[in-house]
Amino acid sequence: MAEKLWKGRFTEKTAKVVERFTASIDVDQRLYRYDIEGSIAHCRMLAKTGIISEADGDTLVQGLNQIRREIDAASFQFDEQLEDIHMHIESRLFEIVGKVAQKLHTARSRNDQVALDVRMYLRDALTELLRRLGRLQRLLIELAKTHIDVLIPGYTHLQRAQPVLLAHHFMAYVEMFHRDAQRMGECRERTNVMPLGSAALAGTPFPIDRAYVAGLLEFPAISSNSLDAVSDRDFIIEFLSAAALCMMHLSRLSEEMILWSTAEFGFIELPDAFATGSSIMPQKKNPDVPELVRGKTGRVYGHLMALLTLMKALPLSYNRDLQEDKTALFDAVDTLSACIDVYIQMLPGIRVNAQRMEQAASTGYINATDLADYLVRQGLAFREAHHCVGQAVRLGLDRGKELHELSLAELQSCSPLVKEDVFDYLAARGTVNRRSGPGGTARSAVLAAIQAAEQRLD
Image (tube, rainbow, N blue to C red):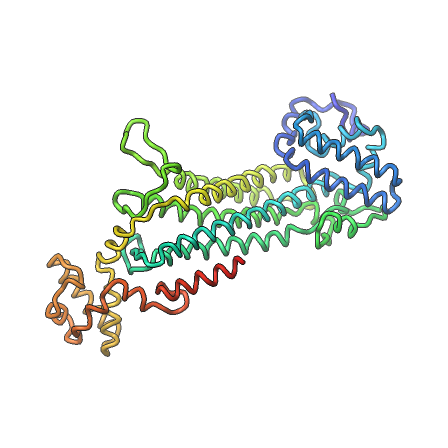
């Protein structure tokens, strides 16, 4: 059995059931690159400050680089008796370089070591997620540009409300993912703080150079309080919150992809490569990909609640409960990354049924608000206009006609202010293009929004 780092204090060996229960190597081994990179920086600092000799520093760095190559090549042996990635690397280092390996942990604790590793991991994960979110936004912008003249019903309460451009609909998601990117960028700033040098909880009496280590590891800031540094997981909770919001946006998009691809809507068809069939019904084409994205959203929500619950009653400073943070973090990163990736691959293949969309954008009394606005322009108060148009809708329902299919006389029976030009006002494309203010659905406003989004991404 491998010897424990704390063997001097104990008279009994750790029970095997405890080793299995406390081991985290199956989860935290993915931190090995960060653990080795942080150890190399720490080692160089120890040599620079004279805490260890330059020769010992070089020996330790060579040994750490060998371990990195072994893990990269999948020739490294993992053993749950060694508990975590830190102990695995230190144990293997002793096998390679001998007793000098015991100097590496000078002025350091596993508490600040793991905090460093996780911050470095999340920093890189956020950088990659920001890149993916940029690609996703660009694809949605391309869809908006491709379908800039396609009309679609806009909905409230899942009832047809007013016509909008399909491009305007796509650009709504660009705004959502832009906010997600903003949140993740801000989270990355708060993650990018170096905790190493805090030691177990109180700092270290050795003359370490934290600024030097921060420079080697490209941290722009150093933690200000050692107690907080080893027990802070706010940055993970902040990421999980941002990830949950992003998954919620992906889930909303998924819901619309699912609805729009039904026979009842018929607005889009998903690419065959991103749908599945039925084991019993030959005609089926199921939107399993967006359904799974929608389903995986709850998984990320769960990770956020798990970590909030884990942290809510922890006294300062480090507690072993914090070992559970990485399961939530890693799975949330993996889940969000996979969901963004599958959308990046799926979106370009979506086929739009523009004819079906435009037909839907001209039915269901979807131009009723525009008729009310028309009457307001004729001098009627809006509440009176609202009542008159309600009567016109009732008349249309009774006679099986849309508002623009009613005769002039029929419309005038609801309000004598209606003139012959009303039919130009009720045309679907005209109702869209009159909404030309910033943020509106008019073609000019959507093109301006596309340009602004592209400049923002550039």
